[in-house]
Length: 411
Image (cartoon, rainbow, N blue to C red):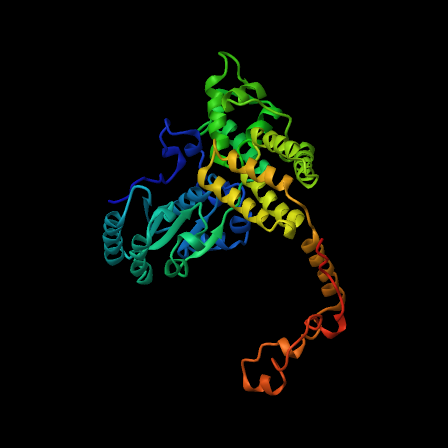
């Protein structure tokens, strides 16, 4: 059999020595926390599981959002044979072995086969091409998991044969459910240890996990191993030791979060690079998601710097891409470069304000007729009606009712 890692049919069969995050993986959709848009009552994935009509899927989401968990749920609840590959370790040779098994099961037992490929974006075009005929003839149903945008990382013919489900980072409240469940579960979790978790320690674990359930459970497990003897209470200090970083005054879901991001944006808007890089450091060192800050800078580069320095948005986008490529611990370097550049750049909100003015007229006036001279004229009838005939001078491209309007006032 070509499975490169086995998914147990029930968590009680998972090895006692397995990491807590692995032992606590849900087995049914009712145990899954978060992703209600696809797993909730009457949602599409739940209906597909209930009717055992699973199409080929691509699960796209950040680490710890539940991609492998959902694959395990499908394995447990479907009546199909389940095969699993890691794209990091396996290739076409292992795929052929699974296809051979799937064909025998289909021919002799009438049984369908599901193939789960973890990190499918790691496979090149030729390897992904090898899947196509077997999806086409129904030998296998594919479940691919990826942290990368499948539009760029999965070939078009394969993507067209799959339903893409987008998974989101778990919210802080979702992570709290996951952590509490692990603390209370006596069979799979830490329930037999009788541990208590302080409220601020729970907040600390969840707020520094960046929506990643695996990271939250790993932190909890480390906390359970470094507690002083005969001390069942996990405090914030214990969590800080587990995280090996100083805790700063920062609540990602509370007032301080909004105060800091506001201070960061306003420092850049006020052309103060020193304050901007200080607040950037405050947030990064406190565990803020770096890509959240990068996205804010991309928005700022267009909204506040705008055409006063058209290069600014390229700097911001390049910093975001550089962080995504480099990661931590060095990823702060391009982010700091972008923050100081944006703070130092000249500012113009002219394009932002132009859109707001235009939007106001769209809402007020509705769909005004477009001048015939600039309409598309692909057919003979349209040409006869005057579409595309003549030309417009500056100031005549707007609908007639808006002639003379000015939305864009460059500084």
